[in-house]
Length: 299
Image (cartoon, rainbow, N blue to C red; front, top):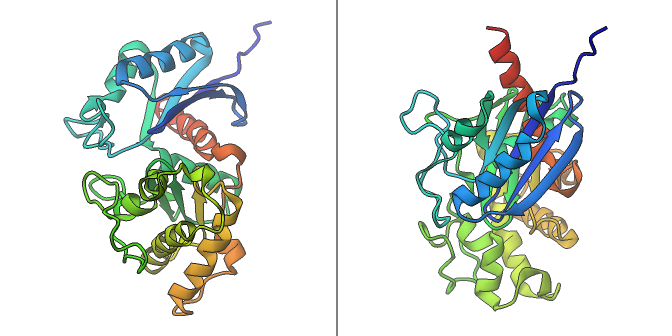
């Protein structure tokens, strides 16, 4: 009797600081994973290729959730490229082309935050709309409306929305090389060290810089609420992994929104990820990899 081999799905979470590669089964359980720094593209992606090759023909598809901006339009001449990223060496690099040259598999390509949003929705399928922000080395957001990612000509870039400056932060220029003091420029992890000269994890909890940062993150939540009216907003990433931050953001959000529109209880509405260790993107990628595999094999 022939034994049917289980299908395996691959995930690449391509972050600005690190890559997380994983393989999961049809129940979207992580079976094996590896993490390595995001260095120059060829070196980094070759490590990903080498990881996936060990699973042979059992691996049937891969989903890549990448830092951006990226070109996700399959009809575009630059589909699969990382485009105008400030990440050194990665601008206009053909990420999907490199992977496809060595891994002849169906691939789904989206942003890392879209993958995270998809993973979170898997755990709560009754939700028809949610927004997932990553507040880390950079800031990005993925949004799902009526079960699908939002986007027109490309994916959203909500991490670069503009925010009102905090009165105690007017002299800080911001760290975004494109916009200076957009949301990413004033609230991403590097902004903490740029202001204080101290890495975020070493800054005292009573420092005013945390309330300044929470003020900007809360503005993003207010803008998202008024623009998309999601059922839930989730904040992941290294900055929000600090337990004190969520309470600060909720307090600032309540003050800024000022009961203008009705939202759920803030402990339900503004949340940290349901999947531990910021693994929402990995789980979401498994599901997206299955989705593209099913599409290809059904033709």
